[in-house]
Image: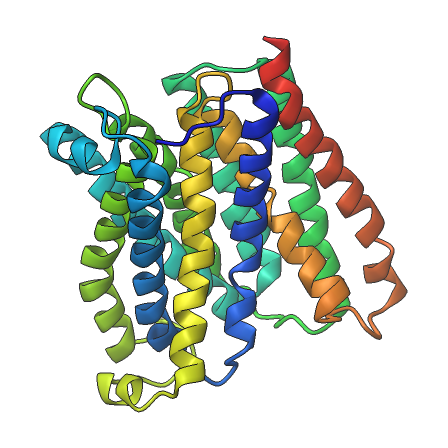
Length: 330
């Protein structure tokens, strides 16, 4: 099983995680008219495929007790349960995040949903595995959270975000943040103890949890959307073209790669789950960079919105730097 042996290697793995988690949504822009519920079926397939590929390659470099297939067979029932639960929790959180963006806009979804997820996730992971300098770690979390708030203000002042941000969207974003911040501690519990799942095995079981939860949850949202979208059907899914289906599989594979890298870094004793999760949440900066520099979302935006972009990126860079060096100053 591949696992980084130095902090430099672990940092590279965490950066790949951050880039992947911040880039997968670009595949949705390739199929703007394809309903998210239909996209999501292929997304789940991509998550499972990449976890199996990684497990059978990087996770099977030797035939010892930590190898992928041996680890799956020897892991405890409770560890399997935690990993399945983590996938289910993430699945609901991910669906709620998209619904919140559709209902209340990014100005509500990002500061409340992703900001709350960052804070909840780091606190819970640090309690389970207190690794890293707490001042640098939580100081970095505060800076990244501030950057997320500035990011949301910039989107709001851009003038294209829907103005209706009712209590429904706020409560959905709160639920999203609590759930999104809770799935990683469940992964940590799944990897704990002598019967724990290794990072590659836990990624595969996690993917199964996503699938098992997506079947009832996504079918429900197809029939009764909580957004302004029209109901969809599996007939529409089957009528989708190669472009639509490959975009979903690619999106899931990119997110899944980020998850595997985050799990691998968290498994390394020098890093720990709190640092790995916090670095992964830098994906918001990556996503913002795609929007600003590639998709030109701020082209023609008011000066009040554009002026917020430099301080947003500065706060992100300072916060992620603080989180990155936290394991070196224990």
